[in-house]
Image 1 (cartoon, one colour):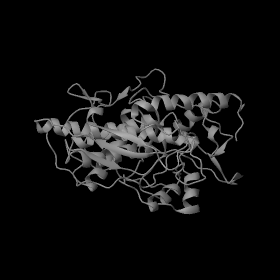
Image 2 (tube, one colour; image 1 turned 90 degrees about the vertical axis):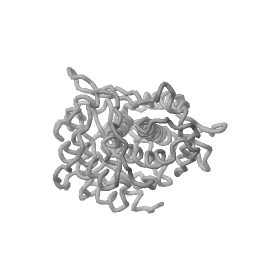
Image 3 (cartoon, rainbow, N blue to C red; image 1 turned 90 degrees about the horizontal axis):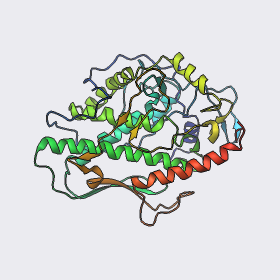
Image 4 (tube, rainbow, N blue to C red; image 1 turned 180 degrees about the vertical axis):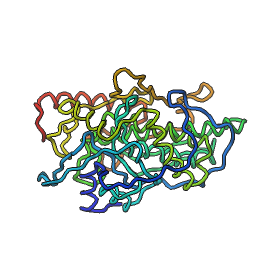
Length: 385
């Protein structure tokens, strides 16, 4: 779905203003497990919501930095700055599959779902929009995997340069019901992260939500995939607690678990987050640039693995090594289902695969992007496009 110039403006300025956000009471929720421990499993089998539609609402994520300026069609937008920072105690409500109205109100600071960047001592910068997106995708995938456990199924998504398909394979499900539930949860989280990793690749190779508007500034941003991975881990705990039983229950649980996760990670105040950005100006980002200049972002993390260290944890603290389960009873989760990227109608700079790209192909694509960026960045001398 396209919204023409209005959506183009929203995407251009997708840095999540927080100045007018309201303080909302925390939702009553299940407790989040210790994120430093391996993902757990549910002690029982829970009812869940019926199969859900794919979350395709536009949740603006946040370009790296703060008080970012913008330009439209190459012309600076005078007097316009967006803060891009959110308080860890004011993350607001969570909306599964946000609507266009949610997107608009987010950008002017009136949405009850508060998205932005938070600096944490144990995990560096966290992008709440990425966290929420991957949690939503985990729930969506689980709602289709669990009732079809062991049946060959294909879930088709919108193109991102290539045609994205989730292919679930036929297999004999585990005899034990709790094992079946655990496999469905782990596989959903694994596939949700694959979708997030592909989005980073696609952005670098030319994917545009709106034709003519480059999203290259966001590709491989250092906090992105760690934030996505954190979202899948939060979703695992949520599903293990039975909070996928209905969308209202899921949304309430997410609203409470996000502040819990940030507290575990030792999140800083907005002033502390701005200080951390100031320390990295001209190193990781360039405050002189305007969106959508690609090299406003000067440092990227091209690692697409689901085993991740934070890009910028604080000194003197125990950084959180974050992982997802990648095996079930000794068998790789890829044996039960995988993301396939088939040739699309407009692949821009992405070489067409012989048959399809798989998650195992993403590292090579990311390393090619890294070499190209480093070569180009070396000649910029802190200048923007």
